[in-house]
Image (cartoon, rainbow, N blue to C red; front, top):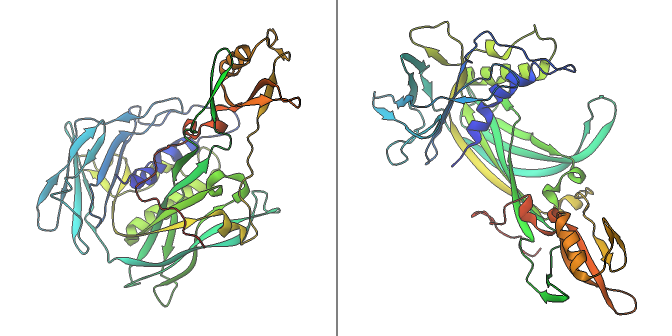
Length: 408
C-alpha cells in the first residue's frame, strides 16, 4: 500500500508541534480543547486502493494523536455515483480497488460524517498526466545553516514535462529503499566448554526505507513552455548516511495538481520555514478544501488531494557516487578481542565459557574464535549486535522490486 500521501498530510500535525518549539519548555493549548479534525486523503489515477486518515490534532506537545473511528467516508464522482470506503483500522479508511479508480479529467468530492457532523470537500479534478524524462545524480554544493560554510554532496535531479502548462502545477515526493551490510557477521557458534561450530552467517544484508518529508513544488506561470530541467528533488551528504554503502533506490512520484492545491502546499511550506514567535502565522489558519456543512466556521485541517501521478525509479551504487569524487559513509563498526586471563567486570576470565557469557551479557555477538600468536585458542572476537546482525536496524527480506546491479 502506498502511504506517501499520509506522510505529506501529516506534515500538518508536525507543524502544529514545530511551530511552538523553542529553547525553553512550553506546552501551549490550542483554542479547541478536543483538537481540530485532520483529514488526510488522496486519490490518483493509479490502480490501487486509496487511503483516507482521520485524526484529531494534538492540543499540547505531550498529547497523543486521537484516531477518529466509526466515521462514514465516501467519494462521489462526476456522474453522482458514490463509492463508500471501508475502515480497516482506527481512523484509516480505504477504497475498494475493484470498484473505484480515479480517472483523468473526472471530478471528485470527499464526504465524511462523524456522529452528527458532516464534512465535504471542494470539487476536485484530476488533471492531465505529466512525464518524467529521466532521473539522474550530480555533485553539488550547499551552504550550511550559517550561510557561510559550504558542504559537498549528491543531488538527485529530474527532467520532465507537462502536456499543457496552462493551469499545470507539480508536486513531488519520493520513497527510498537502500541495502546495507552488517560488516562483522558471526561465522561460528559456541558450545560450552570450548566447541566452535562453523555456521552460515545470518542477516548480513538488509534493507531500510524512508519517505520524503519535504514539500517540493513547481509552477509554470513564469515559463514559456512546459519543460522541466535540472529540478533538484533531494540532496545527500553521502559520507554521513549509510544509504550508499551497498545499493540505493529511490522512487520519485510526480503529481499534476491544481492551482488551489499548489497554493495550499506553498503556504504550508512557508509556514514551516518561517518559524518566529508564537503569535506569528499559525498553521491552523491555513485554508484547506474540506468544510463542515453545518458549521462553515469550524477549522478543518488537511486537504483532499486529487491528481494524476507519474513515477520513476533509479538505482545508485557506490561506484556511481565515487565517479563524482564523493564517498559513502565509512564503516564505523569495530571488534574487540577477549582472552582468558584478561580482566572482566568481576575478575579475570577463567574460561572460554566465561568470555562467551560476558559477551552475551553485554549485548554483543561472538563472531570468531581467537588464536594468539603462539597458535593457541585463547579467546573470542566480538562486536555489537548492530554490526553483526543487520536485522537489528533493518529488514532482512528483499523488496519485491529489488534487482542487483549488472556487471559494468
